[in-house]
Image 1: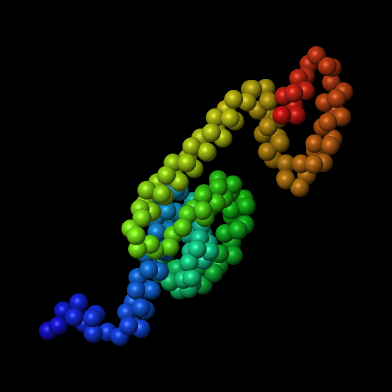
Image 2: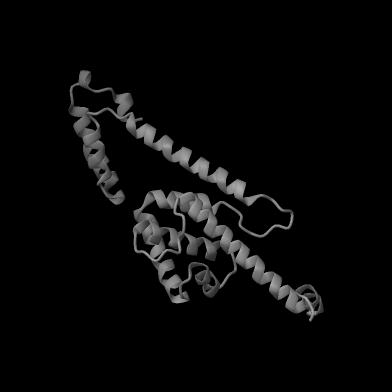
Length: 195
């Protein structure tokens, strides 16, 4: 009975190319999945749950897979153990979820900057993904440190400002500036207000 290698060698070059293409696509999709799991901290995005972090992570995987590979919805869905219609629906909702969850939008942007294509030179993508993960966490930590340094007296104001929709920020700024100008000069430090 002939072995696998002998059977493979007897196949035509078109079939060999097709097999290689399939393997490369699976490799690229798994690289994306591993990167998403790595950066989000979720051990397995295929777990059947509706928890928001899993839903968004699966959405990021699908969006990156469509953006970074030429894989069909069918192949993308196989990695998640879903059907292709679920992947289509997920892609429709992912943009909105990323808009509502800035933390995950940052993750998507970081992961979007990585090249997931198969390289024959053996370059170490895992170390690149690890470095991206570390950089992302350092950026997020830096943002947290900056927000911790706010004066206790300013925190209620910052909380109120965070509730304002982006499209109304200009109006609020325009209305607050005259109020700030009317305050007694010795109680405010204008450099801090406009920095």
